[in-house]
Image (cartoon, rainbow over all chains, first blue to last red; front, side, top):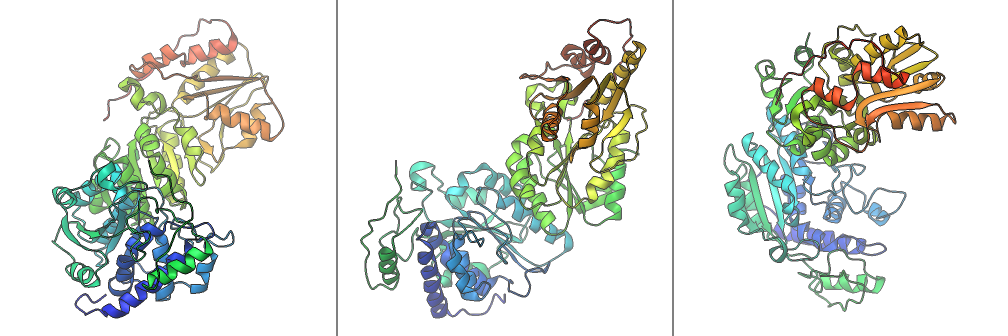
Amino acid sequence: MTDSKTIDKQKLQATALRVREHIVRMATDGGCFAGASLSAADLILYLYSEWLNVSKDNLDDLDRDYLFLSKGHDVPALYGTFAELGLMDKERLKNHLSIDDNIYWHPNTKIPGIEFHSGSLGHLPSVAIGVAMDIKIRGGKNRVVCILGDGELNEGTCWEAMLVANAYKLDNLIFVVDRNQFQANMPTEELIPLEPLHDKFTAFGAAVKRIDGHDFDALHEAFSAYPFEPGKVNVVIADTVRGKGLPSIERRADRWFCNFSAPEIESLLKELHGEDTTQLTSETLVVR
Amino acid sequence: MTYEELLTSEALADERFIVMTAENRALVRNIYAHLGDRFIDTGITEQTMIGAAAGLALRGRIPVVHALASFLTMRAFEFVRTDAGIPNLPVKLSSFIPGFLSDGNGPTHQAIEDISLMRGIPNMTVFAPADEDDLLKMLPEIWKYPAPCYVRINTRKTGYVHAPFEWGKAEIIAEGTDVTILTYGLLFEQTLEAVKILKDEGLAVGLVNMRSLKPVDEQAILRAAESNLLVTVEDHFLTGGLYTIVAETLLKYQTTARVLPFALKEKWFKPSLLPNVLEHEGFTAKQIAEKILGYTTNAVQSKIAAQEFSE
């Protein structure tokens, strides 16, 4: 958690590739929200490997840092990160959607390291506020990160939470928006436009940074500047690409939830390494 | 002792307590002076308050949250169910002006489905005190219970001295073979007086203050079902409240009873001051007694105390 240290970018990129492999392997036999997971993978990996004071040994400590996945669909990126960082057994990922385990489409606390369940959008900003408030009351130095989807910002409770976080000057709280430009079926700007997003958060009293959410140097620079301004809620708008790493599904409205065939998975794993492109024939979502 | 004095003293004795409100300060107006940063007013944000309460409970706190009953149970329903109910966190819901207590506010403020909604949440417990004495007797146990709890706050004074609170137990006020009345909340006062009228008419009448609606005292219901007539009296929709609890219980034990329910049937009540509301909707002691008897009496209804306005 030493913010001033340098990062090993090549190592992070290599690990991120393995996290993406885990995500792709979960996108079959029932599937998962692969597009939303691939966009959030780099920032989730960065936070757990470089910034958060969270380890296997401190998961019950009151002075650990907290990360809440509010958008929830990105949980395969979290499972992959946990597997790569030793918080979770890699073999366990094979239990995705098994009735005998608890690895399913949304986060849940049966997985050690997951702080709270999500799935209903716009809930975890307020839960994160409660944790940040308690840390303030106790005079703690720990930090609370809450990852939001950009589509999730349609929910009024996100903005209600911004008002309250601002009122209580929760500068130990960081909202990270995975700005992948898509909500479930549509580009955000075509359905419910969010821009100018930076200005919106600034108007709500937050200290805002907007960065490339796939650039580990940019992530490191932004989070090293924590707290952005004393007394202000921190917001990082991470510009990302839905489906990042798989050109055949990148920025595609119809590849939100993905359930690929076994041959497609093999091809997509090669595509991750730039070795192949994939002719996808599995069913896509209907887009209006 | 008032609600606020009890909460202040419990919170001062136990650092885990956090008092929260969504800008409904009627019950906790002076508590900030005692608790400082353990008093949190989130403004008019019932949903955010409940989510934040869940976050505080994750950190080992016992949040006691305050809002008007209709907004706490309906606007914030999904937050209560999802953020307190699913993880079984000890979030304590103090629900203000439930049922008829919203008197002159109008249907937006009428929480007359709150018991139905709250008891439908796994892990949630539900309590409806008859008056301030009953409320203050149950709260210490409710606040120390390690799960979410919903309390239909009722600070009216009736002068009745209640038996000590027992978790999941009803309070048997009187027993009788002709009629047994089951009730909860502010209508306790009216049923107490109705029992006197019925006794004067020669009936053997039982009265039960249900107070703990989930867990519910099934044995008290089954005993009441042995009377010739079982009467339920509640300021709640007919669906989902005490009448439904009685029906579920009788079915569970494969028995039945002759039941006369007093409840709001597919309608909101006419807004006015509380004494007028009770009279208009047919929930005064005299009206209850006469409906049970099937004829009018010469009984004189005692004056019903009005509510004080609170935001």
